[in-house]
Image (cartoon, rainbow, N blue to C red; front, side, top):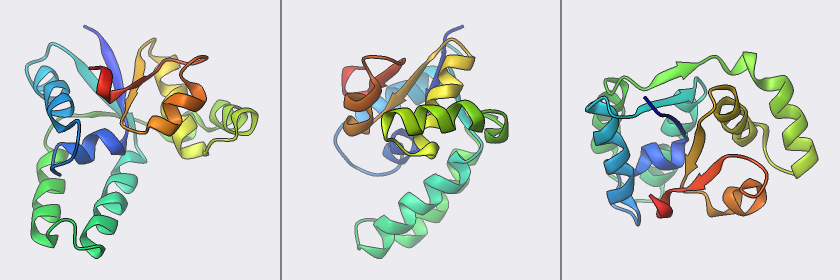
Length: 140
């Protein structure tokens, strides 16, 4: 089974009506049907609520929908990998490429599992996509 790493930008699209939501939902359906395995570093469970918090604070998403959505995502069986095991390599990638360690941890996990990172962060794809397995959600 193919393995793909997803970041918080993709997971948020499972809840929020935004561009490329259809592609994000396709990934999730393939995961739930066991045709694709989705994984993420464990800091996804901090990044995703923070992303939704910003949307709630800006009036872009209802508070109750965010709370309900987070509970639903927790049940989607997204495999998690301990970020602590990835931080050293991620630190190097982040420094060498002027990216955040948070983003680099997703990249290192993709390398670790011989998969690809799927992200809705076009900036990250532009910065790392030519050297690392980083794929833009819009190409799904």
